[in-house]
Length: 310
Image 1 (cartoon, rainbow, N blue to C red):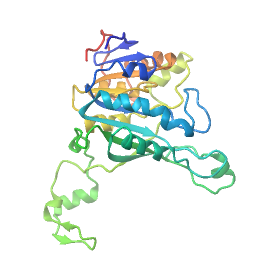
Image 2 (cartoon, rainbow, N blue to C red):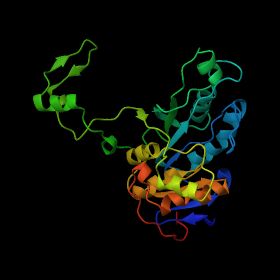
Image 3 (cartoon, rainbow, N blue to C red):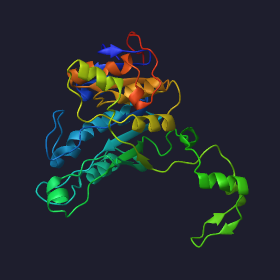
Image 4 (tube, rainbow, N blue to C red):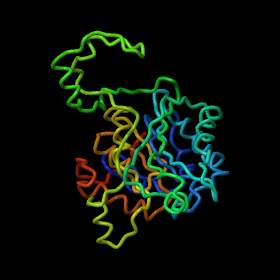
């Protein structure tokens, strides 16, 4: 890349500018993982900007074309995107479904799997339908789509195994009797083997607050404005561990406060972050200058380095 980064660490570079312009500078087939959460098509406009529901697919597809171009054949594209309500009606917008169809049918991505982010701390909304008329329940999940340039991107679920439940630990100790369930599944004695942990499901539960992190404390001390839609660290952490190896290159084209870059750095992955808002990018440096106790990450000390060579 011939562009000068806004700042650099030992593992990555953060660039200030429009993602379309900067993605065009990234070499073809060079990125192992793109993980991002772009502005959603919300009815009410946010300070970081968001396209209308009717225009969202057309707005996002140019980014998607560049993302597919720069991904390695073994690379993955992980897209977190939230739903929206139809303006003036208690019905859901279909923009997410139109988008995923366009990504596969028009851009030629493969849909590897859909995940769901469950945030139990979400505020009940929209108030008209949930709190006032009481005809809807609160919306507490968001989609995360895992897409590939091919049907076989690099992945290894042994890197994201979860601790066994107490019931499973008892089964491992006692063993399982071979049987055929009414569903037709053949349960074998090998099912009680200890494989180091349980395979996670496609539901990820985590909040999106970091009220005790040194990053937020530093912003408050400096009377800086906090990014209103920060990416929870657990989301990029799961997919970076699942879909990449140490030394691989991770990119976030809508970096915001650069949670993705911080997590990649902590996991010994190289990273590129792109953000159009200079204030957000300036403040994101604090993630690398302070220990992220609030995120539970072991963050190494960071020194500024020259531009990352791709």
